[in-house]
Length: 210
Image (cartoon, rainbow, N blue to C red):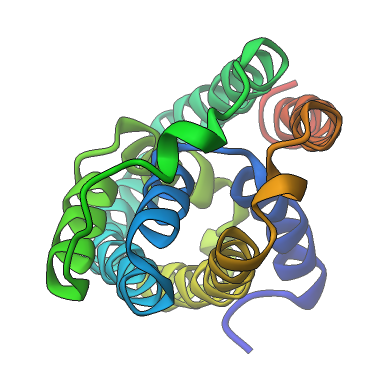
């Protein structure tokens, strides 16, 4: 197996906290599903995944070279990854609530437009770019070799977690608008995932820097 099972499990738990946090991708999925129905919602989910595959391919080519060539670069990436998790955690505690009513009033869009907009949102989202540049390398073990394959494996794990969660969000957005609009539900998700992000940020620093 390219990635150690324990490392893969730690990565899945970390990205689960990231995926559960409400970001641009999630908001686009909710908005387009509520305004245009499940077909457009599903296409929007697929647009996000296409963006993730693109990021994975770029990471496998570029990051593997950096990790293989410089121990200092690897430590710097670890620090950046921890800082990124802390920043996302803070944003989660400070995030506003989703205006569900406003999302149902948008102009209806086609599945193709949903896919295109989601793809561009993902590709141009600095959070996703930093995820691949600063976080994923912390779960790569240079000693195991084939760094590019390890990154691809992590990318596939990210895809699986992301698509399961976002399809669930799409279905809920279509059928349970009242539930999604509850401030207590939104606060519980934001605060619990933020706490997990802080814990893993500390773990990155302990494992790779201190």
